[in-house]
Image (cartoon, rainbow, N blue to C red; front, side):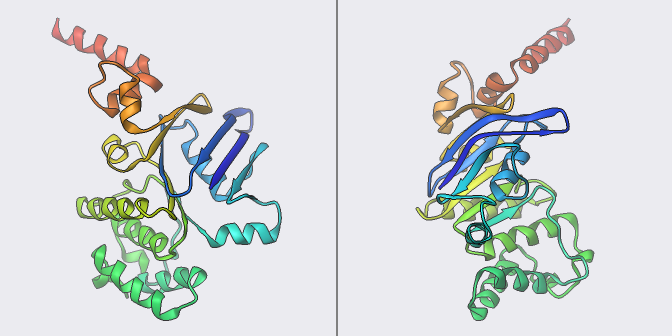
Length: 259
């Protein structure tokens, strides 16, 4: 489904991704994990076509991103992207925004309107649906952006930190169940970044750990835990892989506090 081939990208002189390779199978839910600033959002933006690499290529369904207008339009027709700080038209209502997004992907107007209503109710936004988005709280705006992505019925969902940004516990629970259901469909592929190990443990087919601009390890959650003998859970195993110095520093700090 997705092939990231030897991708290198830097901001000015700072390298972010260094010859990174990644393959994502159709129908899997892949979670990207790693410290802040390590390149997770950059990689998702590359896969989504928002930016281009200095070196290497990104292919979706065998089509190279930005290789031609025709190929790019085909890719965009099956792809929906939720950025970590999604843009929303503040002078439009929530219902208007959902309808506009839906009609970019779905030709059946009735289907768009019916699905919009169900999503508004599901995320408890129906009472605000005809209010300007500028009046929504941060959490409500995040729910609206998520609803818009789900409305597309896209075969590839690219989600950057969907469970943060003010999402309340009810919204988290709803989104977890929806993504789990989508992941169980063999024709829907999801690539998602999250720092929440409990979310990754519950949803991921595989987890890709990013370190030093490359894929450090990619495997199932259980195998990542097993790769670090003695790790109590996924969170500890990930920290041992990606940031062992922080764990050592924590142990030193705790010992000093006991003195």
